[in-house]
Image 1: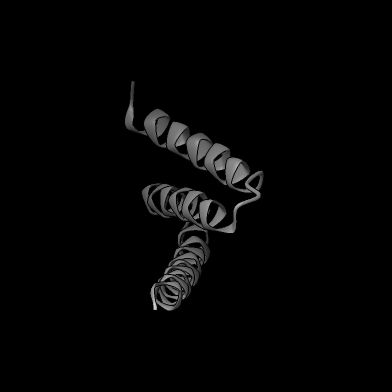
Image 2: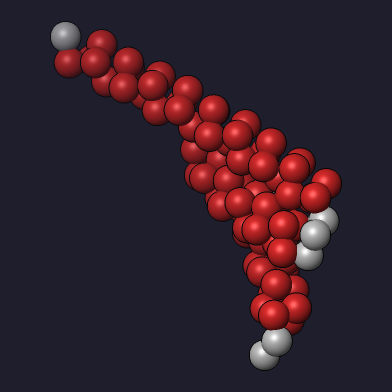
Length: 84
């Protein structure tokens, strides 16, 4: 299997992972799946020299990470309040 074929499959995998993320009803799971899919698209975009694909997906990774941190902090704050 040559390099181009491997990266083509990474692109397909990224598409499937993003599609799966959109089926999640739990926002935390959606963000995690979407982050993984976007990260795969970053690798794919860089591998095929599609810089716009890599950049927009890198931005999506940052957005997902930001909201995941926010979700986990809110969750920790809520569990802290219930302990008191």
